Length: 459
Image (cartoon, rainbow, N blue to C red; front, side):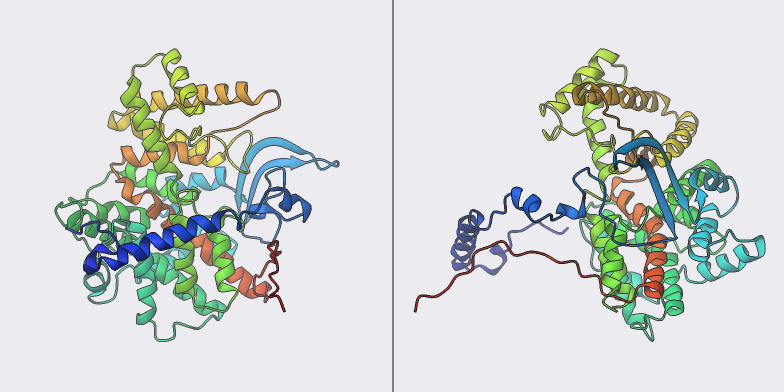
């Protein structure tokens, strides 16, 4: 089993300890002179984090792939709260979610995002044939690039695997848009296998559990293959497959401005290969502020339930929520994870759809008490936040609040939460990558202003 060791103890060199302390000391000395006060952002009209003062994102690109609607702007520039909507190529996510009841729902949405229209049955059959032909990894790839190099982070293993696929491409540096399409779809098709084997490697070599390796089945959908390959017995129900398929649909894209998609656009604008840009997006999504929020929700709710129990009264739930907000419970940051969103105000359509499916799954699998606890917690959390923020404040549950619970009911390990997000969002990354190759030929290069001192040597 891999041990967590200090970066310098491996070498048996005591001088390295002194070097390490010297580096730490110099770092602490440099904090004060390198400090940048917030006032300078206002003085020079710099949009910190590419955000406007009202929290909205700075417009930096145009797209026809998806639209995230959470509010309106009136003639005076004021932000007006509104019900949330998510559109893929003009289709409302509420309508696209109905495809979840048909075979290959996520694959239909993939086709739509790439080709601007929903596929006919013949087109879907050909599209799935292309995808399924790319399900399997190259010969001995899993052994050499995944099983032999396990990591505590499944996302880290996936990121390395994507980069390694570069070596198996006869023309990996081609950035022709059609070549990018083919390469990108090949990467996405391999994600169920890469996710499963990365997880199995971590579970076996680091967690000490049994190792199970299943080859993908060509007749299965992406969602079905994920459930099949991540489970030791490979078994799943129709409702379980439908639920995961819906999760893939609602996470497939979220506009060009979200961090991982924008990272893909920035990286690909340099003219680099699709493997590098996909790996960069994975690195972005690995960050807990972007891809790990549902895991934070699960950890928070696990501690809440451990503290007060599933049969807690509304008064008990209200008390623990206020303790969280007062920084006296959980991680002491004063945040209710899964509540609130940067764009959505009155509602997050993804949360609404997933909550409904989660409830259906909870009833079938005996998790109704836990689901009801989540629903009560959600309602009271919004009430308490509204009290504290005052009149005019609105917030809604975001998709992360119920996605972690949904995966828990599906018996999916928390190690797979962000990888599943990545598997879904890759189709959005690919579509935006291609769109920007076709219609924007400039390297993405925003400006930064130097506000430090100029040191002049004395003559």
